[in-house]
Length: 488
Ligand code: GLN
Image (cartoon, rainbow, N blue to C red; front, top):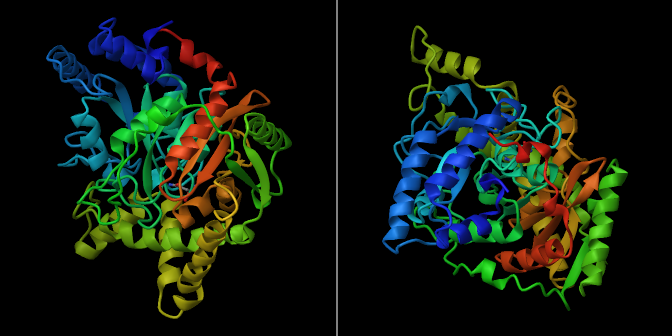
């Protein structure tokens, strides 16, 4: 088996046993990246030289007996997460040349653990999109079928992990951007509880919804990554001061006695039959493993899409005001300051991001604020209450992640509403602030389908335990896209 093909846990074991060095592991990953990137474009920047330096440092650290879990493991980081001295573009022309002077907390935690960064991954511009096609630098491709999208906005991270270009990756999820691409690329993805992981150094899209989380090829690998990045950060006032469990140690395979709710509203009209069938089979599997399956209802689900598309653009319109060509990134010259700002924003910000800024500005403007923004906030409270009530009946929910498998590139680019509908099953989770874990649960027409497990606030441990028990009882993770096996 080529080295890049190992799971993170196996790679770690071999590093511990001194069977392989981090430099060897990193070189194998970099060679593989070089071999498959022309077909995938999962990365916007590959940091080969830096990665090998970090790998050498990790090997030295291991020799001196100071290694921790992720020491020497090559990982990829979504390009919306700031990295000191490494270009961070958010897949936007406005930040094409921006080199941040600091690391996001999640990045410094990985660095402190001795992890190796192989590069920054492709995404939809400023994380707005569901297909990666809003990247100003061209889309990433799905490794299962390169004529299809990897999902979005963290499509590059999902594709990179599926194609074995990294042992894990970080993404961000505001309305589904970790879970939907994880489903479409056949990998594990975690959207942690709001406040579980620091947002310091994530370029903000919608601050009340954004969370950072991991992608990996197995549940155990994802659990190890979550452990490394989660926890209180004094630099993010919304991060929670709640202890982080040892998630990976709690994967004991036992789901007996757990009550799993199946929300009927998530089997939306227009869902592909192959997707619904894979999800139903996975839920039956949970029953066979000893869980009790309960049909439940979250009646406000149908308002999640319109509520999200008021709140997220409203917050985005405020957050993105800082990209004016003065403070960060590229500036388009003009006769005076106002012309410069107008030229920079008008010429460099892509169509979808401009649409969100305009929608959000409108929803917040005097005269419309009450009708749109305030009302959306009230309905958001009702959506949260749906979840609070359902926890009185069940321990977690099991649902589809995306109504479709990966769709062909270009299929939805001219129809923003069709694109927005990709996220109907993921948006409510962000609005409620609860955690969601996606685990591969089969194929429909040879394309992956992911089961979404949704939990109580700060109960990622239960979701991971159930996902792991399911994974161990199935063989989906053994199937890999043919691109993953390509050796350099
Ligand atoms: N697809 C959704 C959007 O475009 C979610 C994006 C995200 O989670 N960052 O807003």
